[in-house]
Length: 337
Image (cartoon, rainbow, N blue to C red):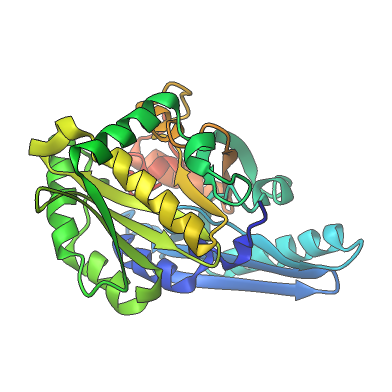
């Protein structure tokens, strides 16, 4: 399997602009080039609402929802050290000029950029994400799905459920209804809810990336998926099931249908993401593993404090010294980090 991560949707500026609104920030792209190569870093610059008249306007950086981080776009032979050193100097100057206090990164599991930038950020392994390898297995259903998952799919098909996929959908309103019902049932955190403008932004700004999937039973849509595609990767973004049909486990047919379609269309990989925590027994991670027995990726997060003195003042101001959350002064708000 060989994927071109540089063309992945998580490095698409349009996606960053969609999420900048949710973060109440501004999407920006920092491009650096020298004789060693090229680096691109996309992020959201957020104002820090410190509420202190004694402090100037301050900002911090975060990655749009999903994955990203600085990534090497081109590298000359023997130029790695020169490139990284030059980027560090240039980006440090940018952060100083723009009053950037801290920087949080979710490195892309498929890009390997956590290793490239481990000397510039405090990087730690968070968990593993799950994939379904469409390229290297003639039958990904047999190779990647667990025995119990295959059984559930066969039962769904035998029951009479069917899978439908719609490219370039005109609306996601029907999906929103099922998704919101699912989040309500799970008593999900507010950050897992999205408004109408969020879904419409995908329809308006990047329609070619949107896949709307349905599981139909006895003429009723009982489960739906809102998935994203890029050059050779499919991402399982959001999904939901109607409460009255949970006992039929239509989520298994959603995955199966996407696998069959993706394989036929020549995609290399379905990336399902990881769990909510770093625990290998995380329930969401274990569920995703049922469809990706053979394929995993290491997911790292990174952090950097650009202005230590100001960071300390903000932490003191918010009284959040005793927290592992980063940045500590946002611990109570915990936006989408």
